Structure formats: structure tokens, C-alpha cells
Length: 243
Image (cartoon, rainbow, N blue to C red):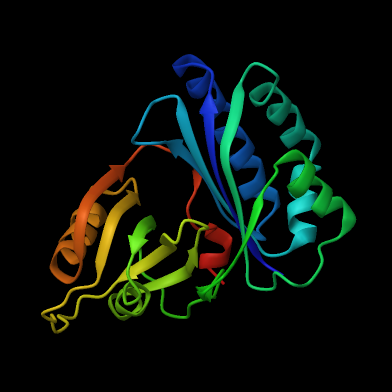
């Protein structure tokens, strides 16, 4: 019962947002060290404003979610990062492919009464797969305003550990993917490229960023592309990569 949390948070000030990212980096180190079932754990500034933060978290199951949040070291940093003056969430999404199966009471209480998530069913994709042929790339992409062909085209061009599509209440289709390898093969380019309104690319490796940008511009019709090189957390859990 894997699920993905995608949260947009408005911090009360730029300094608060910076402080929160520092605490979140420490939290991510703990989670990466002790909780490999948390596949992706990443936080960054929004391109809109330095006070807006975006969180993307992928959990193997409920137990992993509960264990990581109950870690004493994690809890201490969490309480330092999130308090009555730190700000408030503007959007909380929980993406599930088993949305009709009830969550445990404790998980539901956290997601419903604390985070106030909106549950959205997965349209296509997978939260995690262990790839036998792994590359060196580590990219998180978040695409908004996707047409129906984006998912299929992307999976021809790259190898993903995670690739999910879902539709929000306003009808906007989104795609979130963790890319671990970009194909070196040249693919045929169709006259009608799949369209994407906005692509956010999160990666710290300039060579990979350049390679991914070239691929996106060649095979997709994108209105705007934003690059994030500074972030807290990890895109793909290293111990899972080495399996």
C-alpha cells in the first residue's frame, strides 16, 4: 500500500523557510539512514516565492510512514521545524493506487486530521520498482498540465524508479517521476509532441540537467521549465539502488 505525499507549504518568512529546510535536511539524513522504505524524501523552494516550500515523499507502506515519523531524533527536528509560527500548508495531496482500501486509524488520523490531505487515485504508473539496469542519473520531475501521452512517451525515453500520473479536482493532470537513467538512443520524433504546461526538474548534477533538458525540449512541447539544484533530502534511496 505505497503512497505519495505532495505538500505545498507557505512559511511565515524567508528566514523561517530557510530554517525549515535546514531542519528538514537533518530529518532526511535520519530517514535515509534508518528507513530505506521511504523511497523519496525531498524538500525545496517553490519557483513562485522563497517562502513557499514543496515536499515530495514516497512511502512503501503505512508502517514505514509511522516508523519514520516516530523516530526520536526525527521528532526532535520536526518539532523545531514545525510550530505555531512556522506557517501553514496551502495544498496537501495523498496519491494512492488502492484508494478504496481503508488506512489504519492512526495513519488516517495523521493524514486526515493533521495534514488534512486530499486523497487522489493514481491514474497510471507505479510508486517504486527495483530496476536491474540502473544509471547514474538522479532526477525528480514534477509536470503539471500534462496531456494524456506524456506518461507513455517519458517511459520510452528514461528508466524510472517512480512514475505516477494523477488528476486534481480542477482537471489538471500531473506527473511525478524519479528518473534513474536517461536513454542514449535516439527515438523518433512525432509531429504532435506531448504537451506539458510546466516542468520542474530537481537535480544537483549539471551534466544530468543538461541531458534531461535536451531530451525534454526534443520530445515534448513545454511552456516553461524550472530547474532546482538546491534542495534538502534525497531523490532515490541509495541502498535501494544497490540491491
